[in-house]
Image (tube, rainbow, N blue to C red; front, top):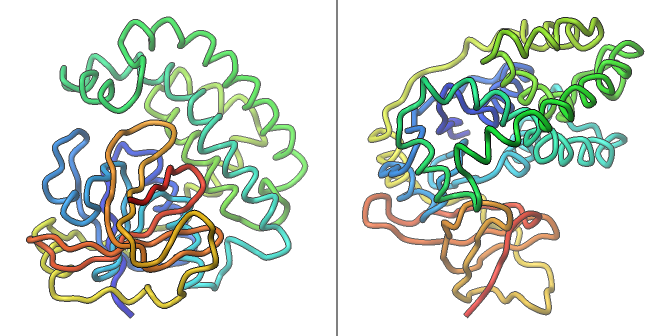
Length: 302
């Protein structure tokens, strides 16, 4: 089985979501450090344009968005499970809430404190991804975001005083999804004190944080590109479910529907009710298959 290669950077909350899943499953993986900001010349040959972090590479198969990445990892490494079938619906609902609403609550107050330490061009880079993103907007929105964060922390703590994990006795993808948002608060000791003040939430956080994830091997971006070029896509055999709007074999463009204008364009080769795969060719890596979830993305064909 080909190695797991995670393109990430240390500060990335969504990368931490996957790092916790890898640790829980006891998986060995290769880490490729990607830049905090564009350009990302050693990532876009793999994705065709998508620049969000993390991206998971397995040979010449490229997986975008943690909603898809987590489920692909679960499919390949089902034991121990973090997506039990009898909890799948609740897990998906909590994951969507955490990855979107909770994430947007915790980011502004933390970012206000991080901005002095970030490169000056950070704001320009993120403004190119998100409409209305500016220092003024972040600073004006931070108090309301913090108020909403506190409400969310209270609700999480209420549940975690009753059970060790969000959905009961076992760690699931729902925990990983909420954890990465709470983890981001650690960038501000003052804000993280809000977590530590809530006993159930604090104990839950420590429980997940203490799971060792030491099977990590660094890999250079050049090595990752060479691995893709030497391989052929393997995860392309599911075929295409009937769809009145999308047809196999046609040029297809995929773009996020919330933020980020980068697109991936390729030939549609695989379509399920939840995911889409296009194959594309790049001079640096040859033929690669790029996999996306369908939820959260605009998909069009010419």
